[in-house]
View 1: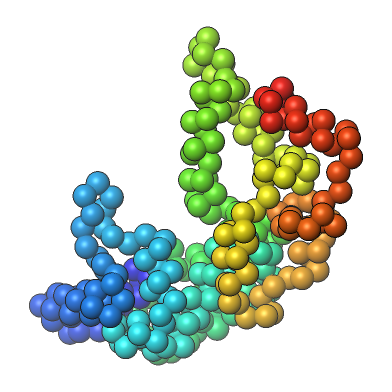
View 2: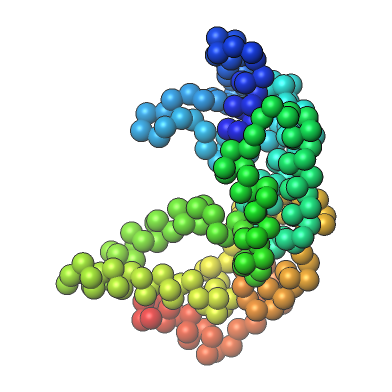
Length: 254
């Protein structure tokens, strides 16, 4: 998002014109979409965050009209962003082909601009991460899951760690994280099911069909890695031993 905004500002010739265009774009975004673009946020840098980026790309037609960047480019950047953010297994070969065509289209349309290091890594090297971790969605490697675990860190420190020394405290927290991230417990323990809100968000991600690696997704589900457990009892079979393990886990025995 920030890369496209900077390109939009630099479409103007002089610095004065760029500053004027920046203010116009900020005003139009506020009036048409309610987004605060590039505004200082006390203690948090500027107002760009994940929600702003999602709404920026969600209204791609309005965004294109405001910033003056071609609509196909914005839509392709949106698809690439969705591919590396969702919790689905993506085909590395299909992603590489789509990302390279996106880069070629951008350079052909705006030859005066060069990619920032971050955009370059995403478009030219994103498929390498997917090949390196074939059974893990790229979205699971982002900072979003890590930030979501901050609340668990506080709870584990309070309820499941020894307070004898700092070393013992961190060791207990680390062991707890290792336990709760184990694929077997993820598969068995119902509390670690993806929430309906998370499932709905991933189901609503619109990706080119050839992005999805269905074969890998099936193998993933069979291994219990990133398995999306539904509320149907057919997808979750439990016996007395599993229930006993789950109860002990909830009581903090492990």
